[in-house]
Image (cartoon, rainbow, N blue to C red; front, side, top):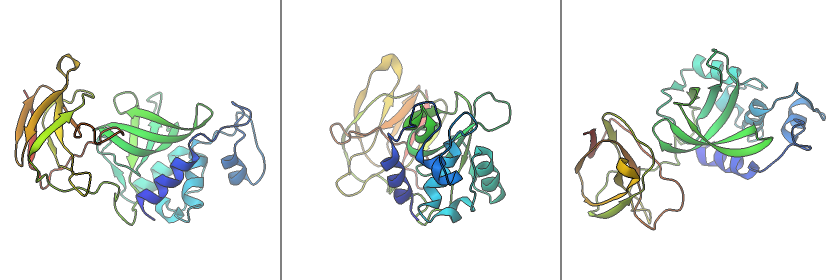
Length: 249
């Protein structure tokens, strides 16, 4: 099972709602319990993740966890060495939350996109009484990330070192401190990437990029060539095969 296959299925569920709202009566609970249930005793964020993998025939990726509790996914992932740094999440990873920083997990979703290191677009069940997309940041709550062993090991992020010189546009997102190393995307018609944006005064920058170029900025994020992408930028961080350095000024 690939990352794309799981995410495509999750995307197809976005908008599925409880009926009535606030009841926890939803098809994922019906599947999990084998009959209609409703009420406060039936939260379903983890049930949605169980449903997503089991009905895809991919329950082996979550070690056959079939649970209504988010902590069971964290426990299984840790036992199999799948927990990763929460700044390094990528599409297909499970993202698990502790809202009160009390050491007990409260919620779970799946990462759809990486917007910046530690900042993610997710798909989550039992959020706003439905399956919906959310923006999550590790600075806002305690977050753990588990990376299932997909057959493509992150196949939605085909990447290569930049080889094209040109002028690129960088939308401003959020500040990043310190030194980061980036790996550039360049493939097919999406030969667009990548430039950096400075957060100073919320302004964007344009510049000429070429292999090995270095930018010195107070804070930086990645962007795509102007007019090429409608979706949010994806930030790629790597310690291998790097050709561009961004350092704090």
